[in-house]
Image 1 (cartoon, one colour):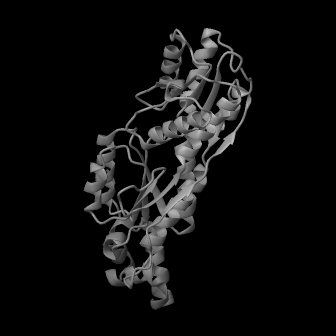
Image 2 (tube, rainbow, N blue to C red):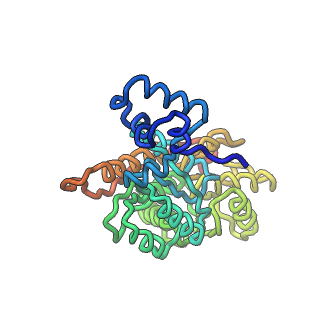
Image 3 (cartoon, rainbow, N blue to C red):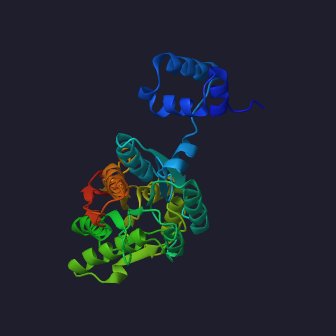
Length: 341
């Protein structure tokens, strides 16, 4: 196995001191032109690459921002990552993206990795409903911003979307279309987003004079297409099947749509479907999907901006104030919910 080339190797090849090589790399204007050219020639010949991690340890400031999301298989979080990466790149930073897979244990491992790597800061969509992982990570003193989650009971920044309003938008649309019995394909009950969207759904029903019994909840262990297909099968087995279904995200809604298609149930004639997130695949589905749009790219960019604002302050007085930014969702109506009953 080839050994990596170090700064001492470059100094030896160029016939200069290690300090001179360091100056050529970091402060080239302080080195005479002939000496600088000899060192650069040695660097090129040997294939030397500066150790960024070592430089960061000496400087005490990393150029890496951590991003830990619930599910990189969900295009919503891909868009969040794209927004965060764009903001980080403009500030000269990189982003280390990790996927907790909605698993608290994996989340804890990645947060530990971020601490070991001494990242500049972390953007985090929590998977651990207990908050213990956050409490443990807070001890490292690394700034973090909560993404797609309101910072309740904490002093950190957060950027989220009003999921109560989003749930209300979805179910109000279905009620206005004439539906009086609606299923809610929810997801893991420990996720705040799932609970908030259900609260919004119940609020819309109450506005229409309908009780909570008008919402039939079908929980799932995950927020993916397979879980949606399973929920769709359970929905088909109900004796008094609801006429509409609101899903906690678009992947669940696409799974329900697949289950209906396989069973020969017409959407929206026999069952109206509304999803959440408005991922790219929503509009491209066999029956274009009505969905509650979240500004995912903006979400990621704003969260990264808050983290940069907090971490780019020098040693002087701190002027950063933690903030909770709440964005508003938007209902995008397509064919999957257009037929009134």
